[in-house]
Image (cartoon, rainbow over all chains, first blue to last red):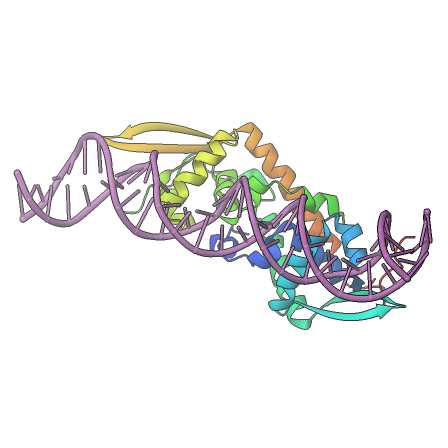
Length: 116
Length: 116
DNA sequence: AAAAACAGGTTTACGACATAGACTGGTTTA
DNA sequence: TAAACCAGTCTATGTCGTAAACCTGTTTTT
């Protein structure tokens, strides 16, 4: 399998950012999670998490539902279908990269000559 | 295989950046490449490529050798052993992520209760 | 019952960094 | 000798991640 540069160049930056990658990957496996769960799990500060969630919501990747647990506010987050698809797409690109760099049995000794 | 947050949180940002990911992945498969080859292959602007290479060199991930092809300057780049190891480590993390999000057969219906 | 402490988030100020366009220094072409 | 060109480097700009400060309500303390 050959390494595809354009695939790497066009990696979804929204998902690629580690903080958001954690969030999205988590939501991908969990279906729904509240703010504090995400915070504990990811280790992000509240402010940081809040900003990233807002960004993901604005992109239509996550749905945020604000309700109450008793009298305290509760923020429930879940991946939208758009978000799931975006992550799957992103995941495939990573998979491709991992596969393409798998075995180092075909490393040419030298740079191919520059095109004329 | 379970999703490890800390592994994502500690992804090597130097390699994680798509522009540099292209460069490093390329050098990983190619052993040595000159500036123009990298530029053509990655599609980066000269300025951009130059800065990223400098950053990778400073980190000890790539070795940069400046020579001449005839009378024109020639810059040869290759991954150092440190760079190879860093990439391999990074790659393993991606591999893990891809594996951990592989099949959606175990998605709990709801958020685990927050810890007391 | 007023003050203090806390829970759950949001806003904002700061610093870091990716990007591309201007610049350098030599080279061939007109 | 001027203009176009190659091979890169430098630098100004804007974007963006981060955490500290802030906000709105609630419980606890005195």
